[in-house]
Length: 460
Image (cartoon, rainbow, N blue to C red):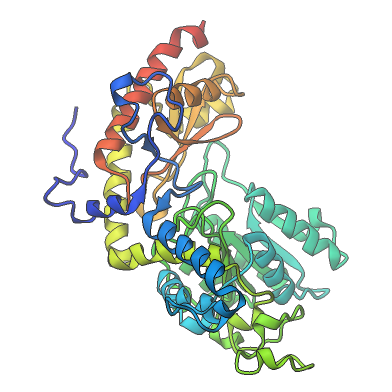
């Protein structure tokens, strides 16, 4: 096996200590049926933080404290809080850290709502089509919830989504979009495009789009540019303000570890600080007069003026517990450096597998519809580390759901937790805050065992 330059030694891996900040499921709790009894109470190999992050111990403590406050102080917790986290200003505990995470000013971010609700709110605010400029540009096979939002928002303005939405697909035989192809469409179609709206990191392939360059190109053509950061925030470094992004939305239960269904967030560039919302709610009202219940809405300047209802305290402090760990670890710069090594280590080991198929070969196989004759996997996430985050997406051959579900089951039985996307993809995400290089090694070793066991049955 070729030497691996990605792995850090225990002495070099200074951030590995933050693993102790998390509650990691065990093989027993994950029902890993093919793990030896002596290892059942060991932690599982959890490579699924791109789907749902694991529980931060601080979040558990903070939620328990808020339950205590609720039980002992009742409604007075809004104003008189024994831990100095009055519910009236609970979102302000996370706004500064979220601003750092996305590269924005504090007034440019708001902790609120859920991803798709925030996406609808932002599209409704910024998508103002005219007879000349009415199209929406996005990647093909965006996350389904985004696709539904795009289609319904376009349709409510009277346009046919099939004509008004431009969906960009990879070139034949390729798995990800080329930057030049995206920029070329913006240049050619820019005067008809009202809104450019991509995922920061594409959920299926793991491609990190060149956000700064796309935003610059869109703005040069007079387009509004927004981003869905569900798979980007807490995963890759972001500079939304400096990149001149108009708006962005995100969830927090993936890399930000806020818990299932955790509270969402949004960003609005400061140049839109006085832009009125068409869906005002009382939590977006000036907090100095909010509880005076005035009949007229007086918006908080900036992103927080888009708030509607008071945020869930339990969901917000659950997020706060995770964000405190991010801050203690030094923010995204050191975590990105560790992420590059972890993901590079994973890729290096996968390339050593006898079952690995080069992407160009796999793309040609799919073009020729001969995938049933080949057994193994290819990696469809970009090879260039600058074009990906902490995720590698593996396509398993033979395709059509013949291989992947069996591989997924075999991994789970052996205590390796990944994430599947039907019919043929398994996503593996080594997260910088809590995964180890040894877990990456175990994940690949188990994958090799599973494929070796399945090869004869599937091919024959």
